[in-house]
Length: 580
Image (cartoon, rainbow, N blue to C red; front, top):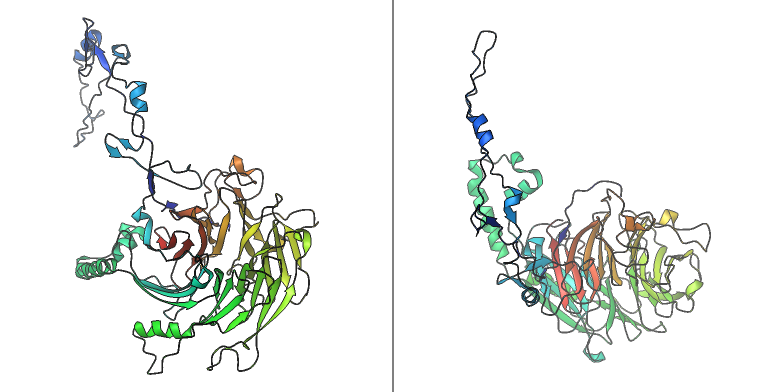
């Protein structure tokens, strides 16, 4: 995290109409020799003595062999500036606007034209009546939006077989989303395929993109390549003209969906946390097969897999609803779920033919045990808000809990956490956490006080239980509770963060040249004070996406380079920032 980076910060949230800038000053009035005023430009007053001296002829020194003069073939031309005497200029008050005229101006217009300014949820005030956000298309390589029938609290990408680290447009994505309907029986688990996601920003040719990266002087293309360049530009324009396509299938779900997670090793298995207090497992293999056939992959003549519209496993062992859920990326089929009463249940894959064989999934594919209960200093408010398995250890996971606690568990040690730290001295709830998949000792947390923090787990155990661990970095510029965190799948220093007002992308490898005075003396603090009062924009902030109302979750696509998707009260957004 100490390396320098030259990524540019960009804001894609749009622009709002701002107050009118100060009117330009009125032209100065001049006074002539008779005392009359005139609005003509002032002329330089000639000085007679200077004219006399400059008019005198200066005899040129004779050129000799010892005194040769260099003959410059280029004659320097000088343009004399006209000076204006200060005593000839007076301030004019006749043309200044009266205060009543200034007060009656429309703050959204100047000289009859709309005023546009950038808006940042970290530093800008609330929008005034009549103001609205408008998208700046140059801030995005791609930007698409989708408004569902009912809002969604959670979603997850389902991996496909189209390859890793994809960069070529148009893109496609398969997403599992859950609804929050007005009635319990109207909720649905929806599997969507979004295809023909074309570039929506400024379309650049391959040559122009190389120029942006390397510079024009490194471009060795010659005239023979003009024809191929024209063809590639035509292809880019055709891709940009594509309309996105949405295919979707909905499955019945009892209750609103608090959280959705797809198993990384078997993406056809989708788990949901219901507000009815149940955990449901769905087999969506039939839907994925249908998507593949519609794209031209006929499956080699094999019979299509039948849809299973109901969950194959419904678990009712939790005492109440919850939000915490995560699949292990190390051990196939291992999952942890946590509820609002502080209980954590561990799911294990069943041994034998019932687990993921050709016969399909059933209620014998998993075994579940109630492993942990409330513990520690937050026993009066023990709700488990989020869970993350270690990216390298199959037995270790961490939890974000109410009361400001983060706990680390090892399932080989029953009934108690291995580490329990109160990371927020003010008692603010820890809403979310994210374990870095590339640097396994880095853990990020986000709190209800708008503070998100990065921890080095090698120094996470303090010497005393009464002393909070020291963070690697703390960011306090956010004014709203942190609702989601996720590290970039291929860049170890980049993280996406969301709060109620927007989505933010940080690059933690960028170092601040001069530490801010607002850092409060805490190592690594950026933007504002420790209590989350807001402040200046952190230098690590690369990109801001705003305009959605009440953002709840953000995810990087695991296979499309730097594609981000968010869900909010107003719908879904998919975008790729222009500076990534």
